[in-house]
Length: 525
Image 1 (tube, rainbow, N blue to C red):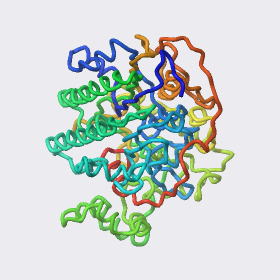
Image 2 (cartoon, rainbow, N blue to C red; image 1 turned 90 degrees about the horizontal axis):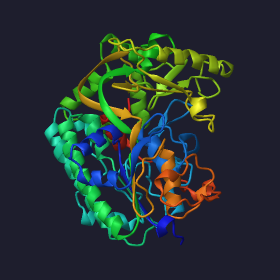
Image 3 (tube, one colour; image 1 turned 135 degrees about the vertical axis):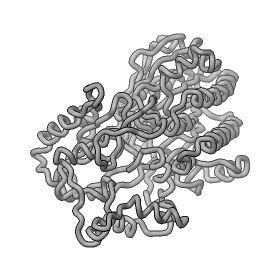
């Protein structure tokens, strides 16, 4: 066991999903968050740039590994296949060693994209994307029984779609969820044999997606401030470094931009024609939303259907009833490009997809045309561009299978995949959406009173490793943020291989409940 800067060899990461730097800073200045104020004023603090796109599924693996998506392999919550089907990404899809593979023993809990719980030197409780508290929910398996006995009301997540127009019930249940998370954290804090403690609270992201109300947000952040106070006392007693980070930021949204509708408008995407059974439903004016509404009236919701009926049968039915789903309602044999996941644009080329219609030799030309389509979408009030457009070959140079383009609204627009009548339209309710600027705090025996310059999510892992005296893997994309560390100790490196990472696992789970949670937050069509 080695000692890092100023003699410490332990580090604690407190992850807070979706925390915006500018907003948090203003609440600190207003005196609402005394523990965050102490953290900011006596340690290192500044904005943290997220991945592109700035999304949970990409960013937490980047924080945990120190590499970008083209090395860890996760571009969204779902992995798109050549037959246009998709599958929920799991811990087995993260292709690069994580911090808990390199710094052990470790205590890891509620980190997104950690299900099924891999076998590690230490203890791990899976977070977001776990379908249920089954035998793969924890490592070791016995930890699950300890949690259910000590915290009988512990839940992986809420079914967010159930809280439409029920703000009071939502806030009450969200507080209960956070308090159960806190009970889990305190349970795990009884463990003394750790070098890495990594715990994430995803509640701020969930709250801000569904209810962007500053008074409500301040109340929630005051609860998180209490959590932070406990963590600061805990790490101070153990002479450990503390890193408080968010995967991305957040801000209010008031309009949507329908990405696939823009492609349809300009002739790059074609809807499935109404033939056979689909034609009957179309002539009757029956759409998927109508069917689900009618079933809901008699007590049968979408979750019940997915649970009781085989996926293959449901997919077949979904293709027969007209709707707006990017996979079920698009005719891929006549479509040149489509958007899937968090702003990921794919040219439908024949080398990549089963029914691709674009010659691979023409992929670059089509990609350029599509980039112009998205760049030309402007705000009807200001005339300003609505989307930032990025070339996937530039963002993800290490992976030939990466998305062709990434499109992301920089401000108050929410991007949607579903096919809509209008490319741009108003949102109802006070919703929030992702921004690229999250937060970075560091505090402890190795940390200087400084503001990091140009900090990125991939810099967290190498900075933490160096701060506790560990060599930094040479394969990492991130750099050590030397300006936040007290001692000017040279960075040492080492080589690692993929065999250090997650174990192989099959993805034959029923993730219906996971998909329902994601859909309720607007992550899925």
